[in-house]
Length: 125
Image (tube, rainbow, N blue to C red; front, top):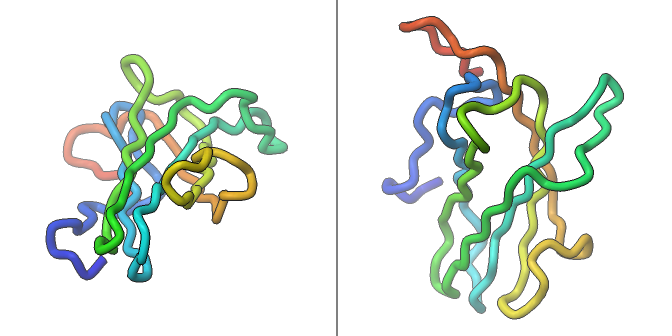
């Protein structure tokens, strides 16, 4: 983003299982009305990429009409992330509408969790 307060640190798509949170940092076009940016994340099961039926987590950020920058926080459940591939569904919704409706989905992202790296080694790609 152009906002110096929201600069990604070690951006990537591969993270160690012990990372406490993964952040999606974004910049949007200027907004006229307050909007919600939301994410749901699922673990892919098996080789065919079948998604778990229930999201592992959700995050929503309300962005005032004059803001253009923000971030969503994907938090681990329990002590560590399960090793594997995850799919994040991204949504943009006007305030007052259902955040996670399929009609409001604007994209997806994937990331991979690997075993925790030895000290001094960074798995980020």
